Image 1 (cartoon, one colour):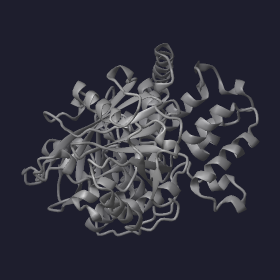
Image 2 (tube, helix red, strand yellow):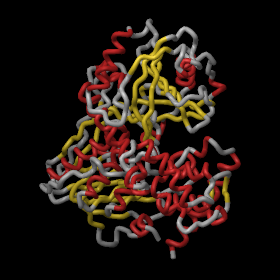
Image 3 (cartoon, one colour):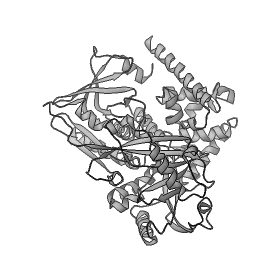
Image 4 (cartoon, helix red, strand yellow):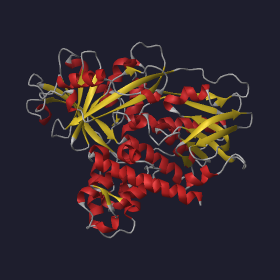
Length: 536
């Protein structure tokens, strides 16, 4: 019985479990906060009603970026903070994050060249850069990035940001939190939280298990799109008055994936006539990712977020303004939509709503910290600020530690000779792949690279004592072996084929429908076996 199952097996008839802080929400903010607090020595429990990164945190544009377009809204503080975080993150997990160069074709009908140059100058200099190169102008008639574009785009600008596997970033934070003592409970809802002067008595429910009582000194509400609903529903203050003083705007951002539109390794940022921008990004070797939209979500159910035909048409039309080869809805092989929980600032334009975060303290009795807004690039800083705030509210301040710390599997330099440990993060990764193949010459090279990207130095846990391809077990699907699926189930909280195919990886894009079903069936059987073992 693993940690999650042993905790769930207890029920309300026993003494409540004790922790310092209960974190509600297993997205990037919740897992980042749990990691930071656990690393400071607090006893932490995190509950997530679904899978880790099941919602917003696996549905981003997958960029570590300062937010170039936010400069037009004078969000200089947010951009500076995000720019500074880019390089901190790129160094912390170079297997799932790496530098990416962006090309902005110049359309004189959109923004004048001087305005773009001024914006990029600010972007280059608002924060210190060590890893990422600065911006420059390019002649698209000669640069490889000009080849897929319409001939009228003759000039462009190139600048740097970063790429991230967003869902794996969440899992890496959860792994690090667990390694530092946190308990991570997936498929577990906090259905009630009763507050008194000394702490919170919380009721956690997981499907197929009796309710569980937990006693916490403080709660962090990091429920993302459900943060407001948690305050209005589950969280009960000592005096009975609702804790919800703010409102969220739920804004849907949708993306489409089409077959690869270009051969080079740059991404594009396209300016649209409505003053918005979209990205076209190399994705999963064989595809191009295009997004995003900003659409106010009707109703208050974050699960209702689904791409609309209008959004598909919009993304196809705007990308086709630039690419020589037009994109149509028939080209779309996959879509996804994320619901962003943005603080309601009464702005009429969803694109103009701030992406910065706010930490709201509720200190009338036992502490409660609510996390509002935020973006994936600033999650570490948000988590650090949140942990500082919780420490202050508990009158138990403890030093921060995450800046400069590697995430789970991100310590690639530990596998390299001393003289190579100061290489740039992306160069470290290439040397890391070579080192894997040197230590395991029998391992298929393509599989070694995929596992290196997904697991970093934790590939040693995936491989275990394997000494040949046969030791990896049955190939459940092409390139998907039993040993990897067992690792994901036993170490990374994966329970379903969806968890494996669309969050722990994007193998779903590469496998046939029958192969996806084979993975689903294997995971179903393995999960059933775990449940039966736990029952005994």
